[in-house]
Amino acid sequence: MLKCLVLALAGATLLLAGSARAADTSLVLLTENFPPYNMAKNGKNFAQDENIQGIAVDIVREIFKRADISYSLTLRFPWERIYKLALENPGYGVFVMARLPEREKRFKWVGPIGPDDWIMLAKADSKIALDSLEQARKYRIGAYKGDAIAETLSKQGLNPIVVLRDQDNARKLVNGQIDLWATGDPAGRYLARQEGVSDLKTVLRFNSAELYLALNKDVPDDVVARLQKALDELRKEGEVDAIMARYL
Image (tube, rainbow, N blue to C red; front, side, top):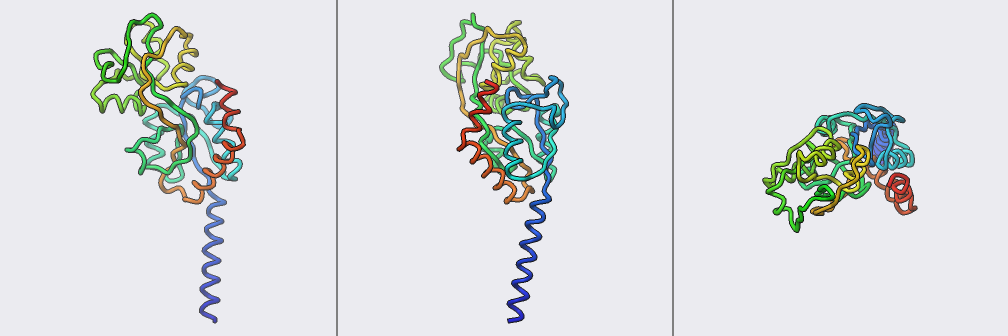
């Protein structure tokens, strides 16, 4: 009887310790300028906490509030840097990220937060017509360095011309420096409008992806589960759609 009591007390102690650790969890969240999902209010490449806005930012804030998990939020540049920080540092996370097969085991995932179709944009008066990605091979394609779209195109031998800011491709397209802009939808069109560019057309839609919050693999599973549950509830209540409608 005494042995059973000791074991029960030990189990309860471990359970309480685990709960305390979960309650004490505070995550370091990183993001980038990727309108309309995440962006600095002042348009700069560095911002913190309340100086960051966007669809994903509003959703992430709400799910962390509902899950009762504390966090800090920083917007930095470039994407490759914050990706590496989240990959290598316990307690870190990065959003929004496409959940690609090669990334699957590197992170723990909360989502989906929103869609990110992959498209090829051309000038409105362009004569380019595409039925497949293969047909784009002969054109100069602009993309965003480190982005999943650029990485996928590179692996398929399309050799995109990459830039450090995706919005720069809007101006390059208008100026004739590239023939096509491989970007996300709705992100690309939003970025183009921010640059004063509106005369673009979609000539190919070549992939449909979903965007996620990616957490370092050392983040406790129960924390990930609480965040996912909060997001599922938010979507069921129609709040995810309502947040998106504020920006699109």
